[in-house]
Amino acid sequence: MNVPYVLVIFFALSCFSQQIEMEITNIQSTKGSIRIAIFRNDEDFKNETPVKVFVFKKVGIKNGKMTVQFEWKEGRYGFALLDDENDDGKMNYNFLGAPKEGYGFSNYEHTGFGKPAFSNFAVDIKHGLNKLKVNMQYIF
Image 1 (cartoon, rainbow, N blue to C red):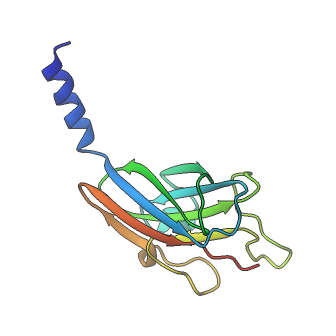
Image 2 (image 1 turned 90 degrees about the vertical axis):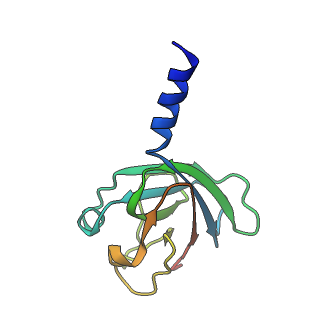
């Protein structure tokens, strides 16, 4: 294969994926992983059917903060995070139904009970570097 063809293929593929740099703050434990679920719309969020889930081991946490990077497509998406301290792949709840693990949403701090609306944490991913911030929240 000629080098120019390789460059054309690489450039064509890179147009569909954009760089995301996510700063995650207020992480309370170094155990487990951070799971980032990507949702396209409110229905997918309500049904808990993300289009993709990225899992990052908690490495390099300083003062409760870590930064992760990954590639994703342009468009409007919501990013929901789980501090999966026991690495079981799901949110754990106490006997009252309150989350036992931390959670967070892209560029949004949820203050109510229950799930937020997708529109509250949906962000536009555009060409180039997209910087997002998530402040993890813990009930207990």
